[in-house]
Image 1 (spheres, rainbow, N blue to C red):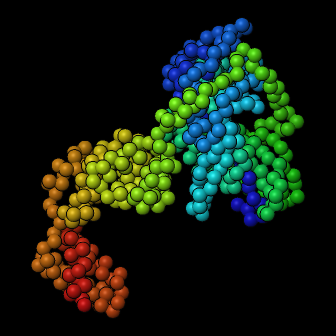
Image 2 (tube, helix red, strand yellow):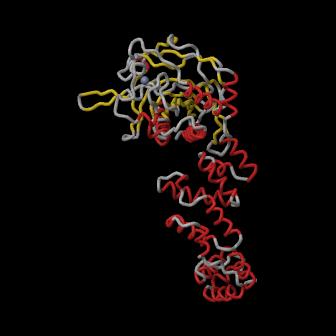
Image 3 (tube, rainbow, N blue to C red):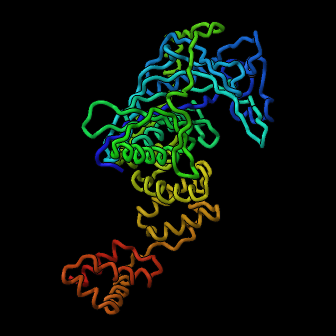
Length: 477
Ligand SMILES: [Zn+2]
């Protein structure tokens, strides 16, 4: 990256609202719209003259929920507008969106910076709009599928508050997590339910005025966002260092070339003309409605993180992992309820369970090990019944066989804590490793590792490490 320049980043994120129908008609949306091309269509979303739109109440409710989750102000009155431009997959010739009176205003998400500090990324606004259709190009022919035309979207615009790719990534992760948590959107990027535009400029370090910004459009994975930002920082600082100027333009991310490419310059930019949408009345929300949505909100990830840090003394990082999504959170809490010690539960979930699930491309709800099983395993280690090593074996066994931990523990020989037996093994280990024994005696505490390891081998991992340590210390005192 660059030492001389500071990057300034803002994100515009389109989130597909989890409503069963489209924004202004009753046609199916989301998973229900997985129909043959142009099967989820009616005169309204196909743009037939004279067909009148009706606002989808469920989409409005989801937008309010999202706004509350983003700490935004919900405007009691918002207004729909027509954004005019010509595009083959926009049958009406305009998109219904919100212009100067959006449904949500202000707000913020708290994110972690690279040095582990907490930082507020402010949100300018969030507004309701409809999606466009999809063009497909096959040879010389261009085909249009309008199933997506009219699907409800919430566009969330941030302030240019991010200063690195990592901060933008953390903001995106936080936003996605809130959307899923509140069931506002499935926010599956692979399905196009969350799309990101990046605005990025550079300014000399210490400067107060932002540089010329470049927009990178339609990024559809977290990795693409990170890569595109890093690419642009390098490209723009290269141009500036050579005394060049940054052109205000829109660029696209080319994944194959690992580079951004010019899509259109300022001169060829689309001229959007906004008109009030005469077919829809202003959207007026009652204070009671907003209160009702607020009252039904579950505790948010940030609240859960604060609670975990306070009640279980978890680090910000650990609390973050346990609140990555609602299901991980529920799993963690169920394990605690079944008697697991919090820090041990975090370690098992974050490392072993999520590690295996990620490798198998599965969600925590598909874990072969239920939270109660995890709790049983943790309790067995804590009480000294089994060693950590045996616990890992039981874990792997339970994962692969689908047998319950409780059942597997019954057939697992307990830990060997018999001092006579352990002392005999320890003496053998010392005789076998005179060098390690001498080093330990001379004050090198780490040298005990070779002796413990030797006994572990003899005991097939069943020696109680705490008792064994005490015995070796006694023998070499
Ligand atoms: Zn329709």
